[in-house]
Image (tube, rainbow, N blue to C red; front, side):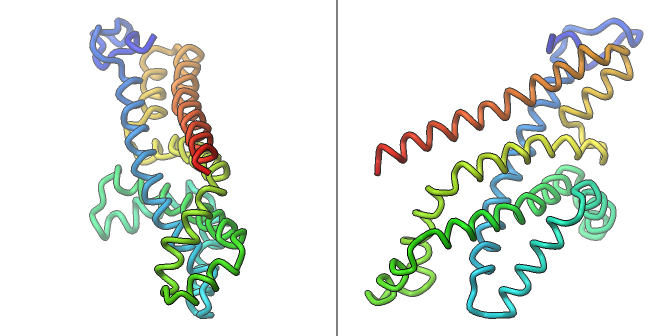
Length: 224
C-alpha cells in the first residue's frame, strides 16, 4: 500500500513504482518529531527548574511563558512562528514547524519536570548542599536523575501527543505525512484508503515510542 501512491503520476490516476509519497512524508514526520522532542526536553527542563527558582522574576517569567503557550492553540502558534518570526529570522518551513512544536510541547514538559522535581524529598537537596555541592551541581547530579525516572510515563504521553500534533505543520506546506496524504487524496480521490494508511503510519510511530518507554522503565526498575 505504501508504494501504491507514487511520487509521479503519468495521468494522475496511474501510480509509479517509485517510493511512495506517504513513505517520504513518514520519514519527514519522524525527523520533525525527533528534533522537536529533543528541543522540548531541553526547553522543558529549563522551564521546570525556573518555575521552582527562588528568584520571583525568574519564576514569574517562566510561569507567564508556560501559561501563555499552554492556553493558546498550537495552530495559531505555528502561523505566528512561520509568518512572523520565520520571515524575520528567515526560518525554513522545517525549522518553523519544529520550533512551534518544541515550544508548545516544551511548556507542558516544563510542568511535568517541575512536578518531578517537587516529588523528590527536599532533604536530598539539603544534604547535597551540606556536602558543599552547589545548587546547580546538586540539581544536575542528584535531583534531576531521580526526577526523570519518575516522569518517564507522563513524558512518553506528552511526546506521543507531539507526534500526533506534528500533523498540523502541513498547514505551512511542510511535506510531512499528513501533507503527502492530502496530496495523494487530491490526485486519486481514494480518501478512505489513504487516510487509513496515514493513521496506521502514525500508529506505528506512537506505538514504537510507547514500547520504547516501557522497555526503558523496565531497565530502570531492574537497575534500582
